[in-house]
Image (cartoon, rainbow, N blue to C red):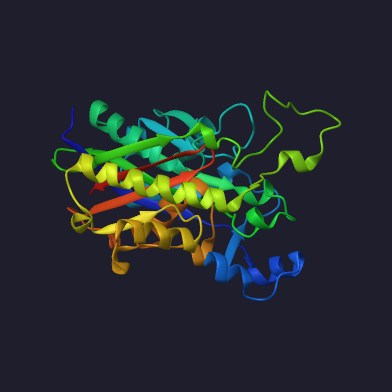
Length: 327
């Protein structure tokens, strides 16, 4: 069993189509500047017609694999965190591994909503240590097709993107997941959701299309509970790691919106120079935002061995958590 794990490659992909706030504000009858003032988002990316989830996950993964410089046959597991797979069945991870030429890799989808990447990263860390083999962790979503274009609370936020990391075993102690708190609060199950299409309300000819789109009926409640979950999980993860915020080099929260990042950072007393963000340029792509932000920020060109990163997220379910990761 290896002493730790480390991220040896970062990757990301965003679609070409840029959707600025003006386009959405005009559609919703909002005054210019309304979206940026309330969310910090300036634009987001939307997938092209015919572009599927694995079409975005492949280039993000390729980037991480090339940067890692490892033999593809050595990758033992592919974890794909997504809420928008290519199809409802089968899972998309086996197809992704096949398209990447990962001939010896297992593959599974993880439906952890906005916290999916943190759940997958925690699992990857344990697998890499125990089995002494690299793991590909990908988070990707195409939320532009699951959002009601007339619901202000959701359509101003969500976007399409993919992010990926390669987690590899290492003999260096003090690396990998140093502390983690994975959280769930089913009392908030109805705060964010897609009402129909599951076993409770199956697809049917008479099913209104709006019921297959994401809805956020109470945005204020989501904001308050997500901030609380992210902050409390972060404190617990830091405690488990045996360190304080002063010992963290970078803070990379889920990029839900700029106001939420500011609120969580204030709760944790994170200095501005430690906060890494991408929400202004890329919006909220759910589970993909953290690995996207890591890669866009420079990946291995910015982050150095021995540094510690605090990541946290909260979203539908409610699912959430925080991870302190040592590079």
